[in-house]
Amino acid sequence: MDDERDFTAPDPSQPYRLDGTDRTVTYAEMTAEIDPELLPCSNADLELLLSLMGATPVERG
Image (cartoon, rainbow, N blue to C red; front, side):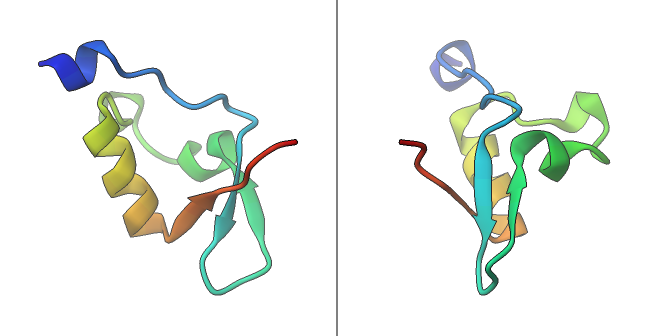
């Protein structure tokens, strides 16, 4: 599948803002309790995870 082949997991230190809050978490914090075999392996999987977590990437400047 092309989506899996082109997928690169986010940097573990990438911050995400949790929707409806002022709280931010890193990708590592967000995925810490997820079984490694269930971590996103495609862009679609990552989008689903972010949607379910209510997380939006924070642009780093």
